Length: 159
Length: 284
Image 1 (cartoon, rainbow over the protein chains, first blue to last red):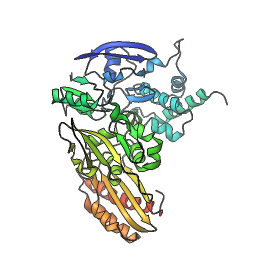
Image 2: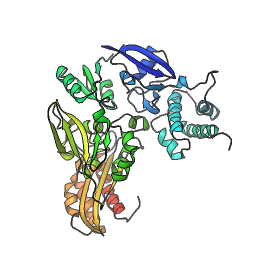
Image 3: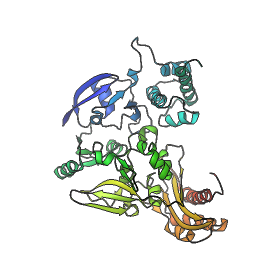
Image 4: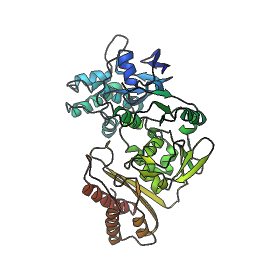
């Protein structure tokens, strides 16, 4: 069967007719051509597919696309500003060397974004806990945690 | 490509009539287990019936008894201040379930209905002797949670039934409880877990409830250990006996996560640690 699904994607209203069995990641990558979100394990272990739905980080590989009806979805493509500049979190990842192959990066950044939006002053433990569901096989975790802390400082502004 | 139809009923009655129309359909809530089972072709349902959009299943009531809707997410249990105050051991266990992304969509009813021996919310609910409300078209029954689990992936739910609510009595003022979980890393499924509830009068044990996860075909009440402790003054010697008895009470298996010997050992150690913590002998 097919159903229509209407939702907000990176601030824009979207309405598409899709097959029932699609997952959110299929909708993003295959139907809408937004390939910034990656699929790693496809079973909720690696977090490469992380997007933000109504303020909460979720695995888009486990999220039935039809459940997105009426919801607000933010993907990595939605982080740049009107002048196409990277967001503070993205810049912090670049500047901290928190990217090697880059495959885990969109998911890492979306998890970090969900954390910092909900908790503007997280502890180190809270940062680690928020990124627990994101694996990096280049093992750049130290730089990744460092990048989130740097993003935190930038978002807070000069003290 | 794995194809299935997807239904989003807005009421339980609508869900029941869909299930009647499509008997092979599978109920799904957060999907963190079902979607993985479909991907791995462990199940091949022709249709899924979503329980995510049924208001009755998605609310938490806490006047007197607590009634937690089965489709309440783990995230919303963690964020519920009244549950945190009244049943902290449940919230502690919820915090240890999976990753942030999983907790944001996984539901308490799904965690139980999936009937994994390692379900993190099962052991705290076992020691608090939660009741489960099972609904079908025209009837409702309420059963003790201990009767729900029948084996890995298998519950006492009949095909036309849905777990609708988890019901908890107000806790006794004396009751204190703790949840301990061993995973290789924090987000892992448990190698073993233990939940302990004690009601103490000084060091005399008035009531003991213990449960262990990942060490038997079902999340397991450790009844012999409970009987050993109740009515006795708790001494280091009694705790050692409880530890040994806990090890004897479980029947773990060896799999990719752990060996049966290690699981057995951990259960004993965690029973000891849990008791010592509740007695104020250690801080663990």
